[in-house]
Picture (cartoon, one colour):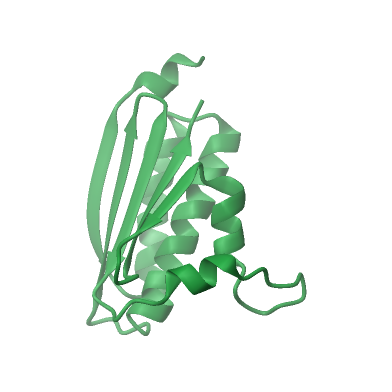
Length: 137
């Protein structure tokens, strides 16, 4: 086990619902994760967080820059926790979780990415907040 996985780190941010704000967030995100995680875990962590944030910005907030998305990144022990929430109406995550889009589908692959890379995924009842767990070691 890498000793870098024992470092605790927690970051809370609220960003405007724009692609530019997402990119600014990931510059900071990489600063925290790359120093603490192996490169394969850092890649997976960013992929998971990016998928959740982009969905919150585009679907939850309609890319409206006056709306906000909240994100929490926490690395404790061997577990990375990513929480993303927006003020949107939410969606039927239960129905979406069961879909398996084809490789040529232009959308809908986000759930598949979460299934592949996350250790566990939990949505709130409304479907406008997701908590993603990833074992980092």
